[in-house]
Image 1 (cartoon, rainbow, N blue to C red):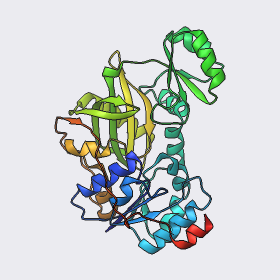
Image 2: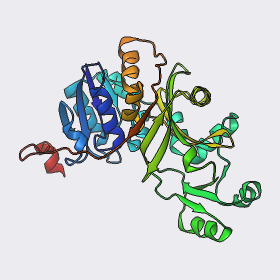
Image 3: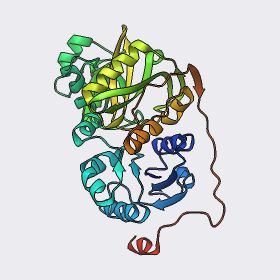
Image 4: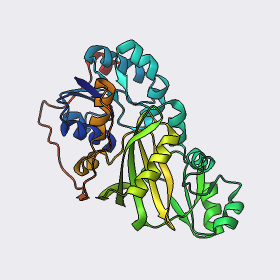
Length: 330
């Protein structure tokens, strides 16, 4: 069996690779990334340089690699690849015989846009964060007061995130940062959680919920427990979303209500962390898609996970380079 993981330089891509290595699949792992200095590019059994997703040559180069490597599964390891792979999933699967773990364009669009995320949850009576777009902020101020949150409608890792404590701050943020969503400040840092779900045929089959501490927008300490009530709430949201396989829900408890402020239609940056609690979502997903094995809820082991830096050493002559033809084009 062969699995192709793109975005090997991203935390997400690296987590997927680590999940595969810790599985019982014995898969041949093919990795791709635009940069030869991406650590995850040296974790695979075969590695290739591919253009960035916004490059017009991205799909053509990816197709060349799929034709040459013939992987059984393709897993995107970055957010920026989701829209283009989602739009071309059927063509990729038909042309190359490779299954792509990617949700529909509709699901991806909801997850990629925090305003659409809030509206999706609100319309379905789920735990949403009260939100508005610039121009409607007075209604939100009247309803929620300050502080409020501003963040880009599309973005990640807390880039562009700000806490607004009065109208003057909010007015400046609206003027300086186009394309934002304004939201109620909910809960606290001590009540923040991340959840993973696996959904097939419109039904959530497995969930994991972890409380987390953040640093630079990423989880650096995680606390896994069964959390049955929160898991049920996330399963309900996953049923409504209807992802194809994995989805990630980030939420805070606000007066006991889990309010979801972000959805990712993909595996998560904490995918590799969840393995330690007995939840290898990459393996479960692949076994279901390739071998028809039902996805069953595993027992979640209570653990505290402390993340830390590590190193990948590349010796002279081991640096991955693009084929000569691609070098000439560059």
